[in-house]
Picture 1 (cartoon, rainbow, N blue to C red):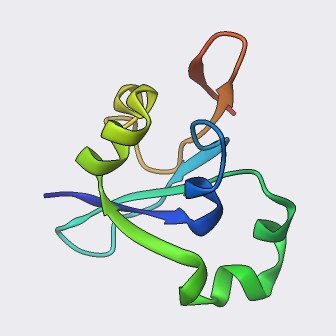
Picture 2 (cartoon, rainbow, N blue to C red):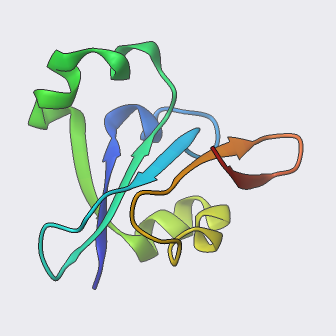
Length: 93
């Protein structure tokens, strides 16, 4: 089952992740997706380097929590999307 990483703030947010970027997967279980809430603390280098700030989840788990994510999982590597709350969907960034 494919996985992604999500900032701990994604789980504290009141809606879908604000941003998502797909990197080159690191192994056969990794989808390459990284999900972020848009919280200002996510911008700091110490946040990105701290494993305690990230959680690995299956794409199924994340889709269950945030159904709109289903629309992005097949997008190619090196793509970025952002949540458009007015349209209730992800748009290319």
